[in-house]
Image (cartoon, rainbow, N blue to C red; front, side):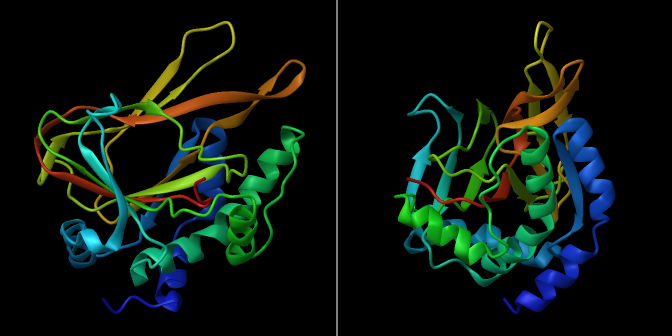
Length: 240
């Protein structure tokens, strides 16, 4: 796959990042522009059948996380995965730092993704957290957070590798926000093939009468009704 870092940066730059940041503020999730072509999506999805590329496979039903399966890549990432992750990090970093400032939290993330990952590894978080997920009819993913240790980057990205409504039905991406002294609010998003969805890892800043507070959020996947749904998950911290 001839997917270079320069090409990844070009495609990532095609998103209106100011508008995306505003939508993230409001909802905790926001779509990017196109990041992968349909052919590149098919090539990435086909990697699922090459177990040597992955460090482990997780059966959701076995762990009572839902139904379906996902695999964590080793650190030897395929070129498009590494390039997209590196291109997205500096675009997400200003949002991460802004959210930390509003919530009066530390902002430990350096300008360089490589330096941030070195800090993760030094803290014992040295396992790759990049994921290929695979769902068939009847599969789903319970609401959860991808927090794998003390060091956490507050945003992550899911990229759809199959076409909603054509390759599969159902399987919408779910975000649920727990609101203080109120019922939870949920959103369901049909992912566009080759596009990303940026979403919060654990919470977002919410304005209150007393200032800013953390609105806790979880994400998941609704039941796939037909077909095959594959996605790429890009996480910007590694796992313990």
